[in-house]
Length: 422
Ligand code: HEM
Image 1 (cartoon, rainbow, N blue to C red):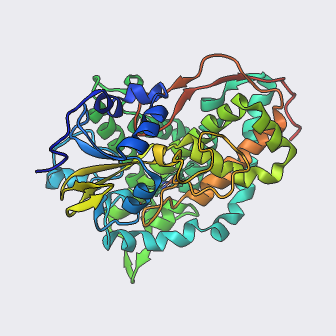
Image 2 (image 1 turned 180 degrees about the vertical axis):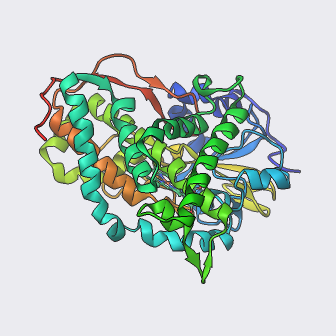
């Protein structure tokens, strides 16, 4: 028997599987109670299948550090369908090729050659490019005196940086951005095709894959100086990556690199505006920025959860998780765990230590975190230095999702300034 035979579904099951509930922010209080009362809880709500909800920091770390027991074979996000993919769907869905949809030992074979490209020293020369991009964005918004901090600022930076890095031409960048937003935001009616989250997710995922695959195959024949050319011609043990692996790696970098950075910058700025004392502290002590970035990632939780499947029977938090059970490690809860953080509900830009799980942990931990940090640091620094009187100018709109923390819109105003001379 899978799951918890003693379980009787109640309001908590409904809430944990209701994306609207998360969009309203009610989940933090719920997780506070779950961590205390039932840290490993069978959850039988409206998800495609019941699953174990794991809410404590230590238990989430345990799961993410043990990819042999907790498999990523169906990806890192709670699936929208309960059906086991057939052979055709496995290939079409990138299972076994997308790093987040892969288990050891194949996962490390796929990931190892990429680690060096995403290390802090290798990425250091990107800083000039990131700073120039931030300056251009600031020059575009400053004369206006108002903007949507999501669309005009936070989404612009990762879209331009990652697309430029991958060789996606400027005229295609809005399209790529839409595929990513709709694929990640498929639970929200605003993106839905025929009111169907699964169809929305699959259609946009396919469109992004097809685009990146086609680009990568062109670069395989005729390399340029972009990273798609590097991936397209990468060799492991003297053999080129398969066409499929090339396509899914290019897909993964774009899919993972655009949304999360956008969300951290926008929600992070919202929190700084809501907490003027912390904003003032960061302005007075800019050397805190490095710590502040970690605190913002902890606070925002761009990835609310990570999904896994148990490969064997295992005990956790006094419960027996059976082989084949679905398991959700709620990072959004782990990052507010009283056992792991002093005053976890306080936003503290100087927090140290800060063992947050915002970038994950273990074999699948975020490969792009150094790039993300560089972008977030440059963008937030520019915003707080160059728009000292920034204020909200209307209602913020949240994405309906229990997978990602996303602001759809954040209207702001500030004193207009003339464009800087070139
Ligand atoms: C604030 C920004 C970001 C956050 C919060 C974030 C978060 C995460 C998390 C939690 C994981 C773990 C997935 C798992 O355990 O299943 C992950 C993996 C990954 N991230 Fe990020 N990410 C960010 C930015 C980026 C960027 C900029 C890139 C690339 C340009 C990137 C590329 C990836 C890739 C390829 C993986 C899969 C690694 C693997 O499975 O081995 N991420 N990220």
